[in-house]
Length: 311
Image: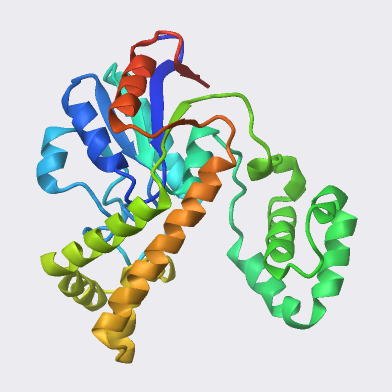
């Protein structure tokens, strides 16, 4: 594929929809496909069970990318994830294989599949702005209106997080925040075909509880305890992972174990609903309620010479 194109397809949907198993089965049947995990938490080493990470045995059977990239004590931004995904795609292209994106982390998926222009972070600028925001949010908003009127028009003046982020980028980069494009509020042409697994909410709820209780039997609590004891512990981001956060509450705050487990199941169900809503907003996703039909469609895309990512 010397013209800079690469065969690619994405399988998306909420947690517990069956994406991972379907993707693994499909990749087992073809030697020309490698899986790129699009999951914000699977990048952390040691966070294995509650991220539904492929097992070591599965990774010996099928090439997986973007798994176990960093220690759980580290922060890993969307921009860093995007860079890692680009590198993985290049490596897969050099092997003359197709890219099979699989995951349910919507923001990370948009960053990769749409190749969004993601502004960098400027910690010193952000710290200064956050210190001022406590008592000067109106003044910060007015500064944003002067520096980047378009960005200000898209942000509520009371939305501290977004005002601070827009100013952080505008000041730090010397470039208006709005110049990075409309980002998540628009959907461009299809760059990578996305197949969505459509699972009804009742089935998802049942799967989520059954899966989480199975993880507990497999040693999830011990996994979380070991992660706490690693040098550096868990980063702010890693600690927010659903399942891990609730079990940390048991280990650190004395929350009864069954209360933490029940809360984890509830939060996983809420996550699934947010993921469903995220993907439903994207008109480009092709929804399939039958796993075999989804598998057939994925193969069609990978076998169609017109289905390429163009960079």
